[in-house]
Length: 389
Image (tube, rainbow, N blue to C red):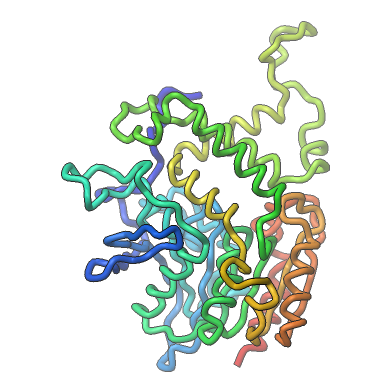
């Protein structure tokens, strides 16, 4: 692990803004959370593409996954070290056509790329220090309620469509259940209506990896020197997650049993790395450079808490009035959010009387296929959005 890794990869005020715009609310009336806590001020960082028409009827909301952010489309530039995470699907003439639609993507509440989260200054702290471990637990529903405030700010009363994969798909489903009159259609991808026991188990392991890193300091690490933050714990958490994002076939075909370092010849070393280990180490360090450990914890917990039936008695009652068209997309090799969960979504919306279609992406890439198999997803998304009034 590099000694030069930042203690946090969070965006902070003074960093290059890039294409981010900012919306702040809750200054006059605190924003209440499902946990019972309140936030005195909430800022959402967001980006937009295309133009909102005079009727405000052509808006599409894109919801990002766990470690995503608002930069869903666009080149790498100052403020955005990598290209948009869905750059092949969002843009002029693409499946989510910015010549036709006004597209919005915001960094979620609890995130670390411009939206209010653990790395943000705590307004109650006399020294303006970050919230750190004082940042409250948030839910997917809290994230959606914050996005709804953003939609009002943008003058959007009803989204033409809301689209997202993984944690983004959780937000999509919460939008449908909570604000059905404000949702014209939905495309949930590689997600679930309720986190399963196994999904919760994976999340817990990642959180524990961060918590046992002594440099995490119970979440109070922001004043530490570079290289003295919880990068090791965050890296291991990401490595665990990365295993669930890909399939066994992909790991086998790409790495097999190849050894990364043969300098010791045929002798075995306890820490001699297989190539797959080098791959995981790379992804762990990569995340530590651009994410915040406390945000990782908060968002992970929100995903584990995800349950559209919570407070609504059952899934059936939560979705009893939904009537918007739904395109549910699963991935054949997804071990984290198996395709049967996408079928369950389609079946639930069909039972509620909503026009529903289910498709399955045939890919060996596992859960990450929703980010990688853009060609396979382009045609059904284009067709689905083309049916909108």
